[in-house]
Length: 171
View (tube, rainbow, N blue to C red):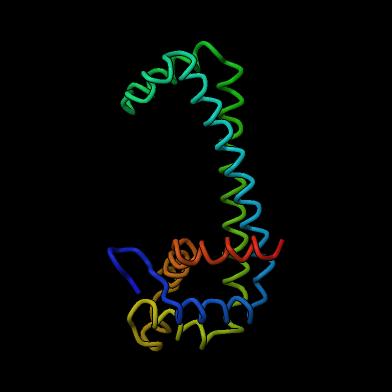
């Protein structure tokens, strides 16, 4: 279901998505992608935390709380000029993590797309239900539209929450 231009997955739709994931044998791929994404995002967040600490050391905690985004950017630039090694490490971590996150997303999407024919009818039915179309309309739409729809489902808060919960249960 689409609500405020965001994909919201109902329980029934979520069950359809899970059936397809299981039928296509994607559970471990998705689990590994989520684990990797969490690790990479934690690594990036650690660098942003280090930057926040440097900004707070520069201006003080109370002043930091009152800074606008533009003021934070200005101070960040000053810190980067004064701490070239930190800047290089900060940028390196962000570039590496973004590259790896893109690779993870591509690999999951590629695996999904190459396995879709194994669950063709189920996919048409599921997408039709979520996007308020008929299965025939889904079958006849352009491939890039279908890929975007699948990406939106995978990135929806509901599905991400479901898969993240499942990774915690697997441990």
